[in-house]
Every structure is written in structure tokens, then in C-alpha cells.
Image 1: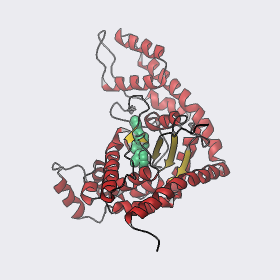
Image 2: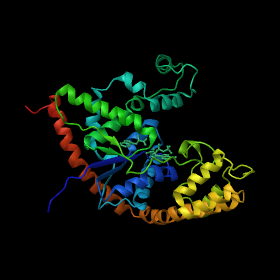
Image 3: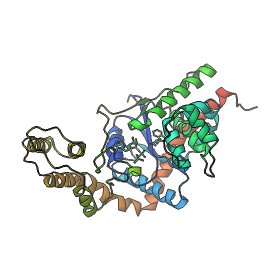
Image 4: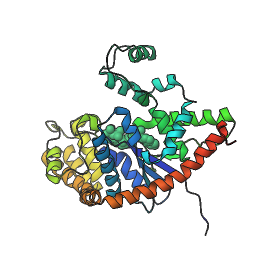
Length: 357
Ligand code: ADP
Ligand code: TRP
């Protein structure tokens, strides 16, 4: 039988809370869809979660929850390598090695670092957002708070996650594209410094579909943990219906074919993600001829979201209750992920001159 080499897909999500509809439609659904056609590797990024200094008990619970939600949503350990980032010690060693080729300036200019560093120091975005002003703020911050070095080197660790597995396809949301660009730059730099062709440059991956942005229910922006506007995959039907029924709307269309306000357009985005094209067309027509009742629209959205989330919610608790199963999935995942990781690490050490005597 011919063993055709499949392209390597890799992605992870930080365990900072339960997964919401944004994570599902933006990331997890694509992970599940990729499983049959690619060499898939999905992990829980618990080391990355450490950059914001979580409570240890909370981190442990969140890591288990995300893993259970991965499995409940259809990630299959028979098809994909599913692992916990901290189970792969090779990552930490390669993180040290790759950091020798990463500039502190380029790390400080990363948008996510600026954001998180300011959050850690409790300062907003100042009028002067130049790199120089930012460096002064961070280094000279007259405060007892500090920005930890792990936060600065977050992109190095993410690059290592990808490069150590030689993954070429990385499904992530828009906010992660800058990190992916840095990963490519680090790979190129490493290869050219040592005159090798060892680390492949990864691409963003959307499985043919357009990238989605799942909106919040508060009328603006995106659904996100820090926005406090999430519908969680494990929300109880009563809670979920209540959240949807409370979504912000407007006074309704006054004239036929009026343009939609942002809150209504957001509701239609949710409808499009979860309902059939016929249902979407029916509500669009009702909006166009002003006969729409937002209460009906919300009820429809809630029930259609529940069709997506109910099977996941029903499986999560069984998985969470089965520690043996979780441990066995992770053991197997770590074994497979470490196989490739240790091979790449050995090559990197050799190339850098760390060789046996
Ligand atoms: P959050 O923004 O809630 O903290 P993360 O940053 O942990 O979520 O995101 C994990 C993954 O889910 C990323 O690939 C991200 O792009 C995707 N994602 C998060 N929120 C959304 C959203 N509202 N719409 C689409 N994708 C999203
Ligand atoms: N930084 C990503 C996020 O916040 C999570 C992540 C860590 C990741 N390492 C990765 C995603 C490697 C893709 C590939 O969502």
C-alpha cells in the first residue's frame, strides 16, 4: 500500500476558560474537519496559559475541561495526535535554543505583547503608541507590577510548538496571524544562519472556508472570554436560551429593505452559522418586508445553537468523569508528539553544534 505523506496540521488553544461558540466556529470545528485528510496534531496550550500567571488549581481544571471539550466535539485520538503541551519536555529545550535567534525588539513590537503587557501593568493604550514610548512604559514603569519575560517570549514558544512538529498548516483565528508571521521569520532566520533547510515555514489554514468571526451578543465586536459575552459549548439550555433572548436588538426595520444595524447583522451571522439556508432566507425576507419579529429570530437562533452544542455538552460530563480515559488519550498523544519533537530537537542540537564527544 502506498503511504502518501499527508501534510502536517497543528494547532492549540490556551486553557483559560471553557470553550465558546467563537472558539468552536473559529477553530475547533476546523480541527475536527481536518482529521481525515491531514496528519493532525492538536494540543492544550497550558504552558502558554502560564504567561498570565493563572491560579494553579484553576489552570489544572481548565486544561482538563478543554481536553474534554476537544474530545466531546469530535477530535478523535484514533485519527489525531491530541496532547498536553507541558507533556512535551522537548518543547522547553527547543524554546531555549530558538530564543538565541529571536530579537527582544521584534518581540516587544508584537501587538499581543503590547496588549497583554499593558493589561499586566494596568495601563490603557496611550495617545503615543510608538514603539519607543512603549519601551519606556515597560522598562521604566513606576509600579510594583511587572511584565514577565514569558509573556515577551510567547511567540518563541508558539513558533517552537509549530516548528518542532514541522507543521506546515496552522488553523488559527485572525488574531494569531502575526505570531505565524514571526514563526516563518524565525524558521527562515534559523535555516539561513546555519545554511540548512531544516525548519519548514508554516501557513495559516482555513480548510477552503472563509475565516469566520463569531460576534458577541452585546451588539458589537467578537465573542471572547475577556469580553464577557460568550455562549459556552457547555451552557445549560436554560442559560443558553436566556443569553440569546437577552441579545441586544434595535427598534426593527421601519421601511422595506432597510440596512441592518450591527446588533441585527450579528444575530444574522449567528443564524447563518447554525441554521439551514432556507431558515436564513425566510428571516432575511421577513426583515426586508418589515414583518420580522426579533423574538422569533432569537428563539430560532437559540434552538439551532442548541442543536450544535447539545451533543457536545452531553458527552463532556462522561468524559470528565473518566480520568483513566483522559490519561490514556494524553499518554498516547504525548508519545506520538514526542517522537517527532525529539527527532527535530536532535537535528537542531546537531546543527547548532551541541554534539556528543
Ligand atoms: P478568547 O478570545 O476567547 O480568549 P482564544 O484567544 O483562546 O479565545 O482563541 C482560541 C482560538 O479560537 C483562536 O484560534 C481564535 O482565533 C479563535 N476564536 C476566538 N474567538 C473567536 C471568535 N469570536 N470568532 C472566531 N474565532 C475565534
Ligand atoms: N497562541 C494561540 C492562541 O492564543 C495558542 C497557541 C499556542 C497556538 N501555540 C500554538 C496556536 C501553535 C497554533 C499553533 O490562541
